[in-house]
Amino acid sequence: MEITLWNIKFKNPVWTASGTFGYGIEALELYDISKLGAVVTKGISLKPRRGNEPIRIVETPCGILNSIGLQNPGVENFLKDIYPKIKDIDTRFIANIFGETEEEYVEVCLALETAEKIVAYELNLSCPNVKKGGIVFGQDISLMASLVEKVKSKVKKPVIVKLSPNVSDIREFSRVCVESGADGLVLINTLMGMKIDIYRAKPVLSTVTGGLSGPAILPIAVRMVWQAYEEVGDRVPIIGVGGIGKWEDAMEHIMAGASAVQVGTANFYDPFSPLKIIEGIDKFMRERNVGKFAQIVGIAHRERLK
Ligand SMILES: Cc1cc2nc3c(=O)[nH]c(=O)nc-3n(C[C@H](O)[C@H](O)[C@H](O)COP(=O)(O)O)c2cc1C
Image (tube, rainbow, N blue to C red; front, top):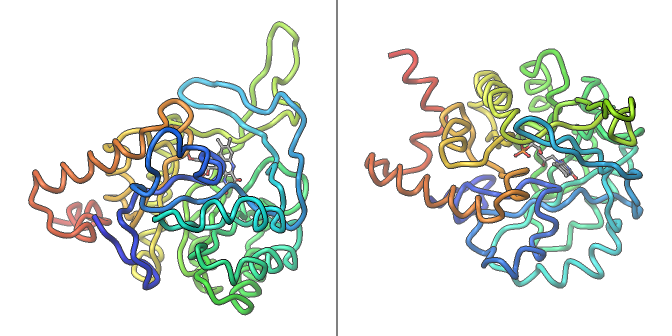
């Protein structure tokens, strides 16, 4: 189950997704999080953010809509209060980074350069729930390219980019992102949606729209991982996220081309799901005599041509 990406060893390819698992430490009373391949932190910004007003999360058929608005203590407080609690945990940590401007993305990354426990940066260019930054970069291909180039030119750690599914052609965004220097792609963030409270005749979320996640988005995420793999799978690793609740879902992402997967919304209804997914993948590989995890990454592309 061990994988190596960007010369970094991960115990296994099952990680937790940003914003759905806090900073990992919140789950310590439930289980030993060092069993995870990696923890991706909640989005970290330069300054503290209070996030959006409630209501900012609501259930939908087979999923949830959220509009948290990147609530977080800011990078300085992260380093002071949270980092000391994670720095001795025996798993990898990836910092999810958010900024309103190019400079903010760079500054947050630079503030984390000497924090050894953080092995890579995941740039969130795809949050649909904030007025400035995030998705603005993720939906404008030239802004995205410029941001990725800029961050890459300033930092030493690997930079992976979390793309927005709210674009018409994910192939083009994937290609340009890699040509701009991204060391890997993460697909997908939430899809923009909304819900109306028919008894109040109003949108439920304070921000009107929010991001859809959970089992409802699995087929869309698998399709986007498939397309990104066709476009750039020979150049950089693709990390699959979206709708993964069971090991079979993770396996779909992997066979479509994901070198690792992230578990998001499933943590809310079953915090143990990442562990069950690790076990399920391990069992599947043993039963089928798959020696190396890499053999099954993108296998559906190769089998299709036989
Ligand atoms: C409540 C909530 C908060 C999230 N916060 C972030 C965030 O801070 N940064 C980010 O890149 N993605 C964030 N996401 C997106 C998830 O990391 C993930 O990409 C998305 O939920 C799809 O995966 P899932 O269907 O497994 O949940 C958030 C999702 C949810 C549900």
